[in-house]
Length: 434
Image 1 (cartoon, one colour):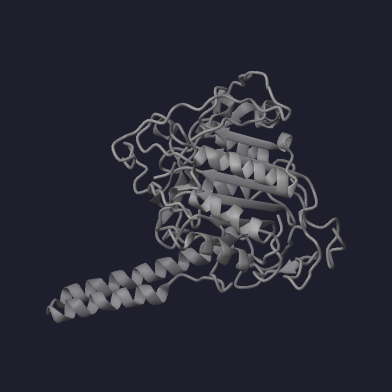
Image 2 (image 1 turned 135 degrees about the vertical axis):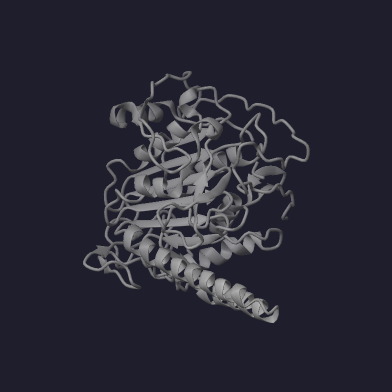
């Protein structure tokens, strides 16, 4: 299960977020994945800020214990919990780019080459006729960070709010994200505008991508419960969409990956960077990005070989029992399943490929859980901690190097396998910038 602590949010930024929303109207999505009726959202002004960054600071509610801390809330998320786990693991020129180098860049020094600054043609079966473009991340920076501990609810987590605090500080200190350009939604705050409700999350997603221009660097971080729901539009290999759970999910419902893609990926122009981190269960394809990469930097395809092996075992087993009708039905069902997985993969490539530069780091594969941990005495999400730890140790890594570094941070204590996915075919050997 997931994970507690400090209230953070910028009231001026929340006011801008509210003013920039289309007539304060939020489209809600019900459990079936279809839009419900628009609901009007009234802005409420929070308390004045008391620190130099304009953040309000309120004490966190005390966590409540429910048995072993691993109870599931009712109704679902079904299978969507991060398991509790508490180990204690011990500017020079920039060739080939326009604009200034990314923060922290100190020259090639034999490291990965920088991303190209020209349009790149799609390949690997992606839609033809237009190009994508890497961002040099030299423009405006905006960040949306969401941490939900689900205070007072069954399935309460401990480290999600800490994840937001740690990530926002890291972005500010190491990547130049200004405090006034961040929106932080956590459930330990008194201001209703700062709560990670479904309405607030959706509105903040719209704010994040509004007016984004090429070479802007946007950052999205979600730390909370994740789960799955049956896929309704045929674009999932395994037949399930991935979802996240707002603090009020029992009333308002979850948010499906299709909706997050529609809001945060589809509107972006070529050359706009969106970095997304999902520290939640079942998050491998939480933004529906078509291109997922292995630790060797190779593009992953649907595992039809594995499916074939399982299907053949079923056929052989039925034959051994002398169940000829069972053998036939098993073979037919297996063939349909493989065909569906292949067609879903093709549909995702054709409909979800983007000319923008969208990169996602997820805490686990779609079928895995992500851990709520205690590291160095602090409650934290294992993925959020590992991402920061890996980049602090070596800020100038390639994409594939960073994927392996994140996994290396987690490997001694955790079974989850963080995933790297992208909105376009990715050269995983170039320098990771943000």
